[in-house]
Picture: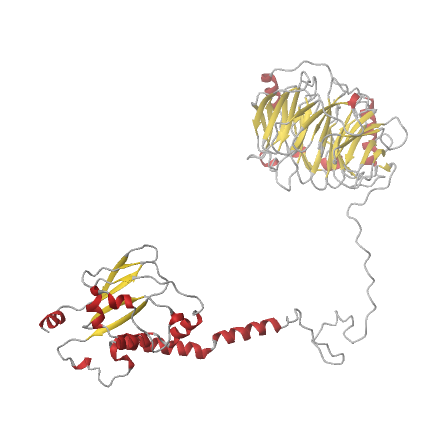
Length: 616
């Protein structure tokens, strides 16, 4: 008794043997349980063999002499009562549903003196807890007259009661039945109509007020006559009729004396000698001096066409300064700078219905001007006859560029946007081609003929520049002699140098001008120089095209995006030779530029149809 009282004086602890599934070792967890010592006996059993009222300790535990002390303290009635109390209704239902599977049995060795217990693998363990009351006669521990929970502490009794009440409450909610009914309702539910039916309007009902104009009645209530139906919208750019077109100016009266004098001027130009004099190349120093003497004035700036300028040409006359421009609208504008005031020297014609992409004066007859358009037509303006004759027509294709195969301008090479090329002979009656060639390119922007060896044809496409031999062109698919593949983006143009053709200049959208050595056309053409130049013109400006100065074999002229607005001149070595600045008179970007073949005259066109001329 004295030992038990002394044991009650110490902080009482509950010793519980627990099993860790992942390790075959046992450990002891200790916790305080309301001034009492909870002693645990781990007993293996099987729910399938259990019958109420017949729970007994195994014989091995009773026969073991080492466990006699533990067996005396836990009697059969207390174990049976504790088992019945711990097994709540919820636990009973769970245990009864799993009686089909037999739990594995294993031996448990209880060592109460050393507080160590070794346990083997087992699926189910029943903890039978017996509470040993203190001997000091505490009034709270009087178990006489209590219910089935008399063997547990108040905390454990309250906990078991809460578990039982919670289980009964959730069972009364019938959540599984409600979920099943909800799923059935969702399956049976039909999808609602996506559109709501509009209510029908009453014919005789009074609706919203409407204006008398919309009701087509006058203020007195009398109905007005019905407005005529508008005709269907036609194509914005219909093709012009085939055949020759009369040269009728769109900005003037064709019977005026000024227009007749203009035609006579062109006839006189035809009789003048416009052949280029054979001169050697001037030095860079003298060339820079001549360029520095070229200026712009108020009289050399004039609006010539409606819309952006896509092509330009300068007449080779040594007497008069005549500038031609092809516009986006299909117009061809001619400006004679010798007339004053300047507006009287401008004449605009409409030989095409779509942009004029290429424009040349005939090298054999300077009174002829040839224009090519995206609408699939190539015409020759004969000012001595006041008519635009049709040279080539193909309504099923769109043209991009052309050049003269022969020096007398009798044969032409025409490039199509779809990558094909046409050989046209002007001496043959009709307006069809002599041969249609399918090139190895998907698109052709420009085509140019070698000035000396005229059987070499150079085309600029999406990202490649090809050189073909006109003597070996195949109608099915022609392979190029040389391919220049150094470009990384779309190519705007590629041209041979004007006198010898020993150089090639290309303009690319990667903001670079490239010079190639074409003195020996073989399988490869070396790259000489690359010049960094801004060519990002955007959507509303015509793309830059670097062109050679016909007087200087090694210099090119190109538009510039720099401020102040200017036109740049580069040498083939990469040096910027000159910049044409115009101050207030040059306030826009001149995308398309042309140089006079023998005189120091430069004409630049912008995207509003205005031409700026620099001259001595």
